[in-house]
Length: 410
Image (spheres, rainbow, N blue to C red):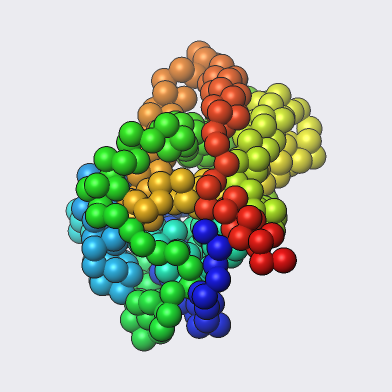
């Protein structure tokens, strides 16, 4: 499907930037308490498990809301559906700060934020498909996904010093104001669609598209790959300190490793989708990412020197997190004309389910001494199986037809 007759408008980058701002805030608000679990438990007089529930609630709610949010994205459009998510994010981010002294109200606010999250995260490929030509869609999806990593990175790096300097209440209120500003900019700057289409955008109805996706072999394989990939990321990120502690590494070193993984993922999420767009290929980059993860996981499992641990963490983060945007775009392309919001949301929900499963299983199967070597080896084996499944995928017909169209024009 050549892109002859379509036009890409410069304003597409403004639309993408406003979306990235609310997406980053959604992730920041989700992971706020992860780097200050002990302080938060002390402040609220509760257990580490209850503080962990503040983040876990997002995974649980996402599973419940994913289908309605996907329907809303594909039926209402970007401004209404993502706007609802952004509005919920702003309101409940502010209530977290205003009622920060009450843990029940804090938990209620977290649930409100969790309801808004699927309306934002499920629209990444919708923004790309509506505003960007096919030759730029993996790049646009990569940047949208990059915003998610940036939100997590900012939360990890900024939450502890803000809490130390200003206290829990002020830190939460600062994040609430930031979320409100991002939402105001979203409504002020976002446009529903360009004056003329940027590329092919005909879509089936949401329920028809859902049935089509679940009958499509390649998309089912992709869902299985996402189940493993996102489960590995959530499991390793959650238990990173526990994974490396038996080898004598400190909490500070675990924090450094976690931050480096995210930085590497950001680099990968920028570089790899650009290469995918330039080469008009999706499948090969998914395979490379899955195979490339394995040395990183092995190093994080067995490395005894901090330098090798950091190298391993960089390799793991680079390949794993760069595969996300490629996978999202591939899913949207192979299920065309099914709605992008539906494919995007289904893939994310696989990660939410596997995140819960992997986190609990890794904890349950620790050795008596607390080591997670067995769990890590199981993750490596699952990643290898996912790489084999990726080899069974067919190349994206949309990307391939773009190559043919350009060749015919030449």
